[in-house]
Amino acid sequence: MVLFPNAKINIGLNITEKRPDNYHNIESIFYPIPIKDILEIVRSESNQTQLHLSGIPIDGDSQDNLIMKAYRLLAADFSIPAVDIYLDKIIPFGAGLGGGSSDAAFTLMGLNQLFNLGLSTEQLESYASKLGADCPFFIRNQPTYATGIGTIFSPIQLSLKNIFMVLVKPDDYISTKEAYAHVHPQKTSVSVCEKIQQPMETWKGNIVNDFEQSIFPNHPTIKRIKETLYENGAIYASMSGSGSSVYGFFSQPTDLKHLFPSEYVFQGGI
Image (cartoon, rainbow, N blue to C red; front, top):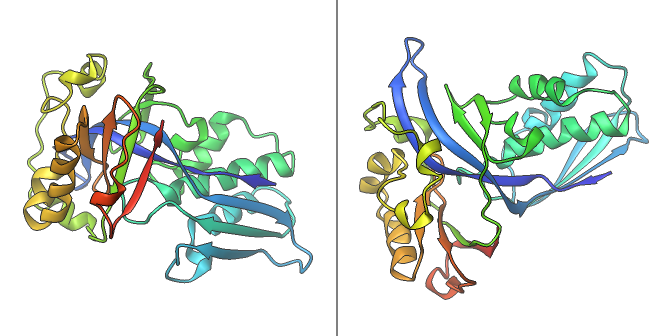
């Protein structure tokens, strides 16, 4: 079985309050995009579940990968055989694109289908929630309004099918601690869910990612990418999640790769 776990972007990200448990409540739009890993799951001939990696190098023990945690989660509740899982990693790391969460969610869905486990969408979402905050999003994989700590989902009507996107990922690494270091939680009078219904031409300066105010001063490269996208005709541009990727929406196909010779660049329709 071959699957293609896709990435997502955040359109707007407001940090609304700090909770008593030291987590933060947010509001954001999650939107799936066609940057995809390649994931293959087959029955193991060695009777031992293994993860085989290619593509972008992944540091650390493969047993700690969310894919393996997803397998073990289902194996604890169902009698499923050992499998070989092959991951060709294409979605950049540390980009605010949810690649690892997507891989885990697609593993759950793949195992459910391959071994006829009969799990419903709601059950798959429940399992996915045990793996990471945004893992459940990839089960339905539809435009979603996320609140709470990013785990309360409401479907929304939003289509960007006629929009062209340029996404740029520099080498900058941003830790969660750094991202939250200088943010100031504040509830908004108008939710991003309402703002997103307005014409895209109104989004600039109106739909914001609160992490930018914390991250841009220490990462001028990321700020400059956003500025460059606007200078070259983007209708709307933003950092995704806590970074470090920045995307721009355009009304027509636009080739900007020459402006970012040392960065990862995706260009295409969404």
